[in-house]
Every structure is written in C-alpha cells, then in structure tokens.
Image (cartoon, rainbow, N blue to C red):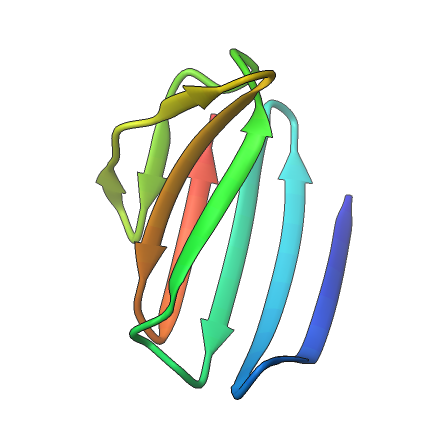
Length: 81
C-alpha cells in the first residue's frame, strides 16, 4: 500500500510525505524546506517493535494509545517494523 502528500504547506515550511506499507513494515519518507523543524511520528502503541530513523534505531515513548518519536532534518526516513 502506498500514499503520498506533496508540497504540503504548514506555516513557512513545505513538506512532502510518502507512506509505504509492505507486510509488517511501515516506511514514511519525509522531506521539508525547514530542516530545523522537529517532525513527530506517532503510530499505534505496540504495533511496531523497532523504529529506525535514517537507518539508526531510535527510542520510542508512549503517549496514550500511541508510540511516538521525533526527528529533524531536511530528509527523514522512518522504518517501523
């Protein structure tokens, strides 16, 4: 399954997001024009055991029914599996 949002303007930032689900793996590719903006990813709690951002394993915090992690940069790739 694939979906994307392109040239989404939020304030003075512009984001493009591509979503892809393959088996039990969720990949989100994001690019933005303001690399100092922190992007927060939130997925259903417990659905994914491992989260990697730009190829590096990251810590996840629980907020209600969600697992959450954030990152900044011009290009961010989240792999959750």
